[in-house]
Image 1 (cartoon, rainbow, N blue to C red):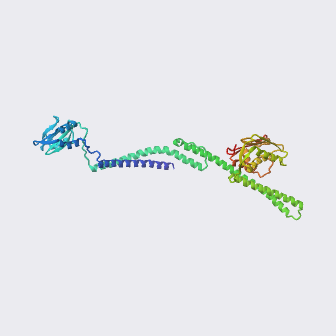
Image 2: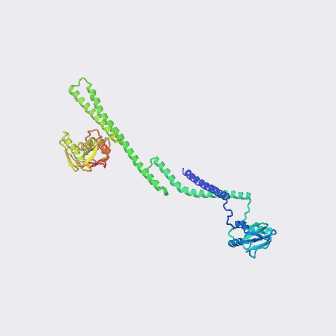
Image 3: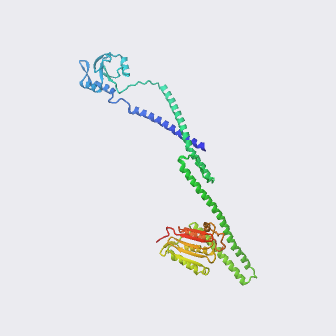
Length: 463
């Protein structure tokens, strides 16, 4: 995988270089064609060549001899040029501003030579014709240069093709070397990323250090955060799986126990020798166990609906202090708790909170019942209401187990002897609080008691 990735990147770099080289060659060829088509590089209207061609307009014949008019001489002076007029034999007929070093007579070969090259005085020669005469315009130290190019087309294209091949080869070699060095540094962390993702796929969440991550440092940091999160989720999943198995086992056990009682007493009722008093007693046991199973199924249904957000809340505005106070009074009026010690402290008489009164009452009752049923009869329970929370605390036995486990379905502490109820009360109470976007905290210390605090959510307050 490593060399495959490096090879792909190297191939991309070389391909880009080839495309750039070919594109440059096309641009150069197109530029040359554009120059030829548009006339770029041709002699301009103000060039010495054009000046020489147009100079005949300043010449005329007087008594058969060519002369230059006043405008022509002024033009020569302005152009810093000199002029020689030749007859058909190449002899100079007349001249204007010509230096003494130039020839008085020119052979055809001398004219050709001087036209192609500068003379010893660095004069550039330009030729023109007037009537039966020819003339030379010379410009000393002219800025316009004339070059002669000898070209063998076959040899030129052969050399050009070799140059193109060499240029391509050199570019490819340079691109390969640079691309290899660059791709090695780039693909090393990419390969490390691929390896890291493969490790995460295999559930290897250990911290892995990468040498020289370069620009990918934030990526590896994020991958490590993902690994940490996945490890936590995996641990949570394993924990939930274990709890699910325990929960199913506990539910199965608690359902089988009353069912066994119902089955046993139903078989006894079928006996003809059972007295009416015994029959009534057996029927009461069956009724009680049936009610227990119904409560268990109802609690299971309620907690599942709460966990899956399938239970709509009937939210109303309630004065929280009298609402909780009424719950405490109702408990004290219950014969089962009339001799128990439950105190109430109200610190928020005017606070109004939005919640489902029926469900919130059940949650608070579950917390108070838990404090009363899982402690000795002389336990003292205090219920406090403030503008921010409801606190239920007791001075009972406390617990040395993980407090969070109390809110798991079907959990009973190891130091709890009382096993009445369905075992879902605390889980249901917590789910009710969470459904209101509120929060519940439980703290406990062995031998000193337990405290449950229901914190109101931000959206629950109305005043």
